[in-house]
Length: 92
Image 1 (tube, rainbow, N blue to C red):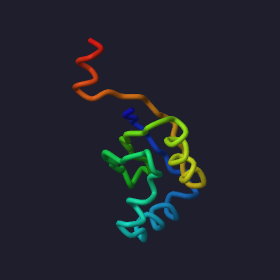
Image 2: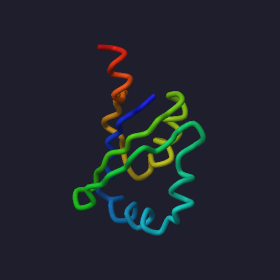
Image 3: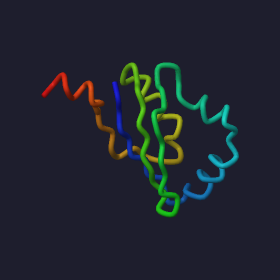
C-alpha cells in the first residue's frame, strides 16, 4: 500500500537531525527503511525543517516501525494512504 507522509522536525532537533542525515552513508539511508517498507521518494524543505516521503508498505506495523525510528527528531502529522494510476482506475 502506498503512503504519503509529511515529516516536521522538532525545532530543537532541526540542526542535529540534518547533521545526522548528512553524515549517513547511502547504505545507512537505504537501511533505515525496514523490510516490507520501500522508499519511493523523499523530498525536503531544509530551511523550514519539513519534508515528504512516499513509501510502499506491506502493513501499518512496518510503516510505524519506520516512523518510530525518527520519533526522537520529528513528528509525522500527516500520513495518508494513496493509490497510483492503476489503483485509481480500479476504484473510479
